[in-house]
Image (cartoon, rainbow, N blue to C red; front, side, top):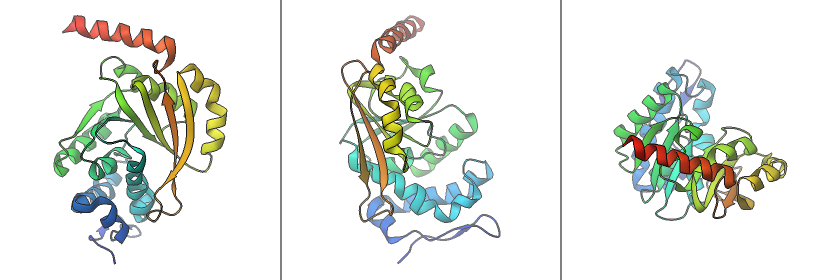
Length: 244
């Protein structure tokens, strides 16, 4: 059985009804998930945030694929979704996990405008939208327990942006595709310099998505980003305090 209504986007593409798995995953927030899907299929396409060809597979490839990331996010932690774009994976994660405090970090104005509209329309009081790049907010935003990202950049570059935003002993969770293991192997040297102490590749979404969602988990020790970023973070924090 499928739920929700179709939303025409072009003569050739439309948003399909939500699959049964969506009701299971989103639970009481299923109506909000349907509304978010409609917003992506309409305003998201019109503003160039997603391609019209993605509309028929929004549920399986995007919303559910991101929502199952919640399986590996601890309870009650702070999260920063780096390069949030149209809100993936941050908004599906927020719908599934109201216990989290989530920051959607995105540098482009048209995207942050869309994200703010979505957050307000869906009543996501535990979500904050911040415009900026990861390297710009270092020392200005409080360090978080978890950084999330999806299809933002190769793992070594992504880690350079996301890992310094973590608290000591935090973790970055990056949704990746079939090349996850290969990317991880190629990024090990860079990750080590960033203070990463443990890495793994896990799959989530059993019984919900097919294929399963692949997550690269990067865990840091007491110095997220390594010595260089620790000094940079401290300098930025001092500057921020002086400005106040």
